[in-house]
Image (cartoon, rainbow, N blue to C red; front, top):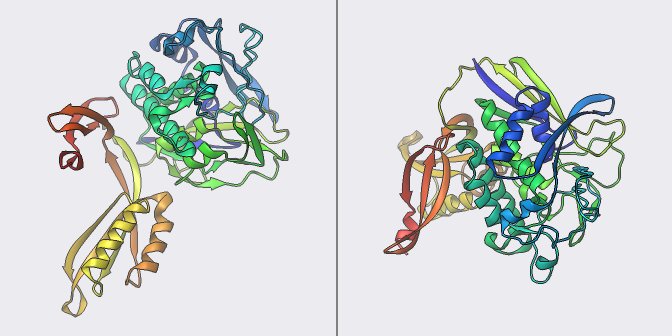
Length: 435
């Protein structure tokens, strides 16, 4: 028997709701989450867990609080009260931290967990944390390898989305609200919950982003705002439920979307078959009236045989067609365009087809969310009159990249790891070697 996680964005998903759902389901404990604070080396930071009611239903809510802002020194900043910031904007999932232990001018109403790029004078007058500093904090912590790797991957995805939104380099991104310690812990707690549960397969419902407008540090934007909509590329999205009557409501934050994106789940619209073992709901702070502002997690014992191997898993679609009436030049162009359009891999195999003709069997590997787009493109742009497709479950190595100084200059190395962080193989990138 195997175990599967089913992640359900009932209203939406935010970082704090994610971990709270696992606590509510009994899959992780308060003590385990509190231990993460020590492993990050954060003094004076505590995690508070409480039961709340959302649309008459009990759920769990998590708050991160701190006695003072000494934790900022972890990021190279000076006196903890020299940096002030105003989070007065209203968005979908506030963390709702009253932070009675804080100085009065440090209100942390993180209704929008957006990453904010700060440049020039603004970077010196508002609290900010550079992506590199957040990454270094996690990398050099005593977190277990799986939690460490997934946490860093989530922040990398967040930084890439923000850099793309602002047209800059990842290394120049500075986090505003996502740089505060509660948001950092949201990501680390979510990564720990996933690694601790050890499910063979992860399923998720399409993401609900919300509707209307949102006001942030740099003005008013449509929902989903710039970083969020970049994170949603390649993911299935769902409409805002009609029962939610608020005109302007952000249901999923960038942090929540980034967590889902990095897990690469199988997207479904209902519980997968099997025996339901546990379920729990994590609550957002905002009250949506008669609609529950919760994120739900379910642990299911599946009928499939368990795969007890220390590798990541996912599912992909293979698209195949036979082509016997096209030129080599055009097939090469098709291959390149498919890769540019999001295909994971494209390859050609020669064979002999009907009428004794030599043909090319064109194969395309794609994420499930990209299947329809790529299948449509092939039928419109190749000479084939039909395609066939099937789903494959995969075991894959976790991957990271490392830039190393060599006699040829800086060469990027691809490193393959187990879920536990064991390095199994590495190789230099051929393109860097040929520069």
